[in-house]
Amino acid sequence: MCGITGYIGYREAYPIVVKGLQRLEYRGYDSAGIMMYDDGNIRVSKTKGKVSDLEVITNSNEDSKKGNIGIGHTRWATHGVPNDVNSHPHTSMSGNLVIVHNGIIENYDTIKKELVSRGYTFESDTDTEVLVNLIEEVKKQEGCKLGKAVQLALTQVIGAYAIAVFDKTKTNEIVVARLGSPIALGIGKDNKEFFVASDASPFIEYTKEAVYLEDEEMAIIKLGKGIKVRKINDDSLVDTKTQELQMSLEQIEKGGYDHFMLKEIHEQPKAILDTYRGRMLADKGIIRMAGIDDNLKKFTNADRIIIVACGTSWHAGLVAEYLFEDIARIPVEVEYASEFRYRNPIITDKDVVIAISQSGETADTLAAIKLAKSKGAFVFGVCNVVGSSIARETHAGAYTHAGPEIGVASTKAFTTQITVLSLMALKLGKEKGKISTPLFHTYLQTLQLIPNKVEELLKIDDQVKYIASVYKDATNCLYLGRGFNFPVALEGALKLKEISYIHAEGYPAAEMKHGPIALIDENMPIFVIATNKGHYEKVVSNIQEIKSRAGKIIAVVTEGDETVKEIADHVIEIPDTEEAFTPLLTTIPLQLLSYHIAVMLGKNVDQPRNLAKSVTVE
Image 1 (cartoon, one colour):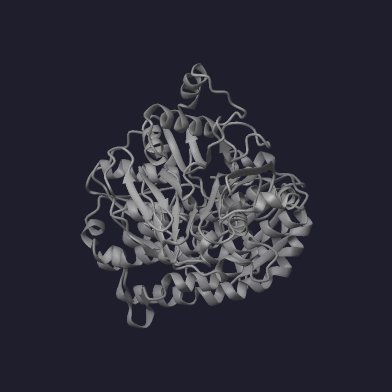
Image 2 (cartoon, rainbow, N blue to C red):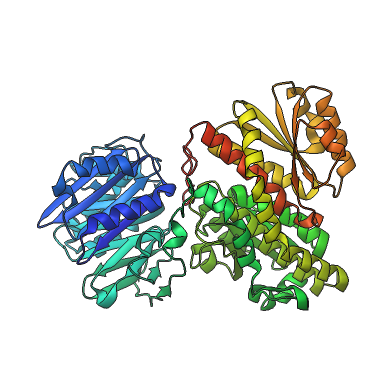
């Protein structure tokens, strides 16, 4: 959840670390802090609030910016309320060690009581201050260097962590470690500088070379010598692999848009195109996906597919259930990863598990992957971030190629996930002989047109903005859909909740009579997805039932629809397409609607309260 940055080298560290914190602020923003080391002095500045609040503090004291070594943190509170004292970095009682931490130390209270019995005192309520003092105690008792002390201390903790630790008695190194939370290390030329971050975005303009730590690994970063990676549990050296970063600086800037979310909504035509580019040759009737091609029998012989995911990715998984069952005729179950990991599910080596995650770091999804692998299942990952934990932990997979998604509320992640899952369903349907060649070609040609149709659909922004102005003061909303568009109703409601804080619920349209209809009155906006595919007549009947109870109807319909237009209060038209691909279009106006309502209400669109982009802890 939290964001970590760090720098050690020949440059001034402050601007690098602070800029990194700004890029990671989507990960955690209850508080922010920075440690700078200069000429024997450790200076810690931290505060409740945003990185901008931290800058106010450091700008008032130029000495707090000095030095070539720095570590920084944006916090998403777990132990201890968001305040100045609980903000990171935390120092050990002696003042020699400084730490930043992403994760949760579950047995911190037991460790804290032991440390108190040994004379330690604590200023904060955090598990992190306990950890840094545990490292100090181990270092003192064992008479060892920082790296060994970190290793030994981590064998005593239960929980998840990504940490960066600095010792002012050892000023040419930073020690980092990881279990369950991501950490990336940037490598400067000739080992003269190094970067530490929760992801690569903070150092993309300085180096393209990065090392990603795996779970239960730690690294000692030494100026002039390089990075030495070891296993925490057995002290064995790890042969590190340097990866070349694919993202560019331009990709992570707003590019003239007011918010990252709006930019990412408008990037969807290109993102969808990039996702199927090189994989789908519509004119030749070919889909090439290495992760499928190399493991084809795993899929074609599978008894079932189990999809595990969280949040928006879970909604994409629900769309995939319709896709795989309709096109490839493979039974599918869609599971919340957070529930799946704690059940005792029946999984065999004839099952394929598909794990979906934008970041590739979602803690519950990673745990579900490990559970599935332990039971012999073949695990296929769908994620966006190259080199992420899920990409490394799964047997095979496919990247979505959406590019960096900074806004906390996922938009292009959802549509690119559906694009990848559509390609998979089509390829498997063809390989299994479940769809005819003419229909297969029709699907490919139709999917190829989706980016242009999304581009056209984005031109209705002013219309959606007007509808947003009408309903921005609503306190409750319903979203209804059927078939392929039931998951879109769930996703539309989630978007509104996430960024505007208006209560909203998504339902299958037919379920309205099983409870939600009791809520309908003249003050209740109901967003209905009513494309002219599938169960259109049934949805029209649902709309008439709403209208008879004075509900306000905002309908998403297929271009040229006349029936719903006569009933609904507002109509948003989408271009015609195959039913299987309608979620790629119907979700667009719902994203725009949520965005505009949130802006009109003065909410922080890119950083909604209490949420973080990557849920890397339970």
